Each structure stands twice: as C-alpha cells, then as structure tokens.
Amino acid sequence: MPLTPVLTSRFAEPRSWTIETYERTEGYSAWRTALGMTPDELVTLVKDSGLRGRGGAGFPTGMKWSFIPQPKPGETPTGPAAKPKYLVVNADEGEPGTCKDVPLMMADPHSLVEGVAIASYAIRCSYAVVYVRGEAVHAHRRLQAAVAEAYAAGHLGRDVHGSGVDLDVVVHAGAGAYICGEETALLDSLEGRRGQPRLKPPFPAVAGLYGAPTVVNNVETLASVPFVVRGGSAWFKEFGPEKSPGPKIYSISGRVVHPGQYEAPMGTTMRELLEMAGGVRPGHELKFWTPGGSSTPYFTAEHLDVPLDFDSVAAAGSMLGTTALMVFDETDSIVEATLRFTEFYAHESCGKCTPCREGTYWLVQILERLVAGHGSARDLDLLTDTCDNILGRSFCALGDGATSCIASSLKYFKDDYVALLPPDEQGRLGRTLKLEPVGAMA
Image (cartoon, rainbow, N blue to C red):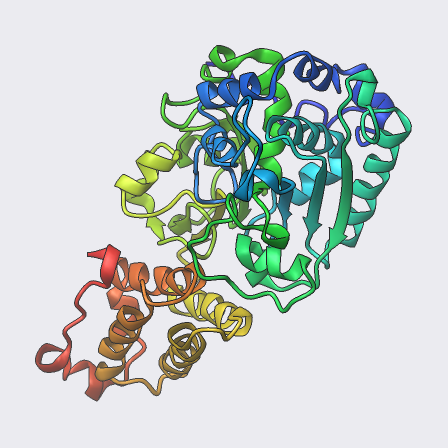
C-alpha cells in the first residue's frame, strides 16, 4: 500500500504541538468515541487491531490491558481487583540510536495524551503517570504544557465531558538512568526508590505501582491507540503483516544521506527505508546495521530484505526492539563500535546482579585490549565465554542486550577481530580459538 502518514500526519502542521492544531485535525474525537463505549469493548477493539507494544518487546497491547484484574459483575471486589488501577507511560527513551518517542512528544504530544486517556478508561484507571527521561527537558516541558491544555479543555480532570469518568495525568521527570526503561525499575523509581529491576512474578498487571495493578505502555504504543479507535481494527490491520500490523516510526541514523524519523507500515524492509533516507553516503557501502538499537544483534547487507516486523526479524536472528536503525559503512570498525556500546551498558548497569555488574565490566576490558592491539587469541574465546555467562543469567534484559552486539559481531565479522591481534597471536588461532556461538546466536 502507498505510504500514508498516520503517527506523523501532524508533524508538518504549523504549531503542531498545540491543542488548537490537534483538535482541528480530529484530535480528541477518538476520546469522545471511547467514552461512548464500555471499557471491555475498548480492550476488545485494541486486541482485534493486533497492536503490539512499540517499546521493544512487541507484546500485544490489548492482551496486556486484559490482564488487569477487574471485579466481576455483582461481586464485591477483593484482592488485586479491589485496588486502584494505574497506567504508567514509559517515555524513558534511552536506547542508543533510538529517537522516535521524543520527536513524537515534541511534534504531537496530544496524541500521547489522548492515547493515555483512552487506555486509562479501558483499564478503569483514574490516575496515569508519564515517566519522561530526565535529559529530555524540552520534551518534558512540552508534554506538561499539553497536559495543562487538555485539563483546560475538559479532556482530563473530574467528570470528563459529563461521562462520570475522572482522570488525572502527571508528567514525571526521571533522573536519566537507562535501567529505568525497564518497566519494574521504572516503577521503583516512581515510588522514590533506586531504579532497579524487580523479581518477576508478580508482574505489574497484578502488583505494579504501589503494589496495585498497573499497565506500562510505550509512548508510540499509546499514540497509536486514538487512530485504532477512529479507524477501527480492520483499517489498522491494512498496515503491515497480519501478526505485526500498524504504522511504525523507524529511526534511521549513521552513514545515510538523510538521517531522521521515517514512518512506514510494519514489515517495511531496510532496503526500502534506506531508499527513503537517500541511501548510504555516496562512495561508500553498507557494512552492518542494527535493526532495533544497540541491544539487538547486528544485521549485514544480506539482511536488507528482511521485513522489519517482530516475527520476521526474530526469525532472521535478531530483534526489532525500538526500530533504531543505525547504519555503518566500510570505514567503521565493528570492534570499536561494539566497544562503545559495551561501555554504555557497563556504565548503565544498575549493579543489582553479579553477571551484569561484573560481566559488562570484564567485556569492556577485553574489548579495550583488542582495540589497542594488545589482545590475544585467548581473548576471543574469553569474550564468548563471558557473554555466555551473562546471557540469560542477569536480572533483566540489560545483560542480554550487552552480549547481543558482541556475539553477532563475532558471528559475522570474526576476521575484523583477528586483524587486531598481534601477528604471533594470529598464528596461534588454528590451535586455540574455539569461538562457539553464544546462546541465542547459535
């Protein structure tokens, strides 16, 4: 189907971030429509649309909403069903290369506010929090202004539009810790604790913010909800493949002519997106790229025609993640790039679990030796062994993400690592090097 802007349809409008522009372009009409439906009807609508979370995991949004315990008709609510419900928006965009949520909040913050309102009504929640990354001060201020405008227009507050629905929305600035992009660490941060992942179960749907049932959704996920309500589930499924439908914002950066945010249906290939971005810079050729940010295994030129949807990317050996497409050409050292990513994960590890806290530090030391030309053939095996002791053994996905770029770089570009070894070490490779694939990279 032709490329039709949906999520970015207001980006070119004059003063697109104001409520005047938003309401002029059908803004908040979905909220009024939703108020005429029952919460269960809304959950079913979003389920039928096939909308999956845009924060990285790709979990079905409507299914996540349905996990919130609700009192059954005629029953006195007890247990989790008796507690208040909360909606928390994960706007802590911190994955290296990811730049879709902040531009969305800057250009069209009311689409997020309306999505928050609809989702809150669907899960019977009267208090929602938007957790914005602390460094994104401009986005935080713009979102605060949008929430204030929504209150003034009667879209938020008490007895919204005479429906009897009450809804308060708070914009909260985090302290800039990458780990707070993990939903349970985000909840701990909101409660005033140090941002560290919680042991699961229990999951947030049962015991989340303040121990009450909580839905945690990404910015782009919730900004998609008003379009689902306005267009219907069948319309939404016209975009992209059946199991991963909908429009999607892809962040393209690195060695391309026109880096930026590009909206296209789910399942669009990297070859098509590169064409939209003007291709790799003139005189150079693609070497490797990330399909979903630095925490996802690298792809190469042989993966240009892989449909960029959750299932297709997983089948090809990586993860769609946050669709942060970082492009590298033949002038870039994959070992140095991998070192930079690993330094980030070592710095951002919260320190709660030993495999991640110690393992990422060790990985940095090994990669630094290799980049400096002081490595050995044994270091390549040590890299693989250290990754294997982190993958699947850390408290959250940060440890797994830290190993992804290393394992995939060794898989596709082992010769680049070997080239950094001293000549005498290169001669030992045939006798000592094992380089067995790490975990999921096998």
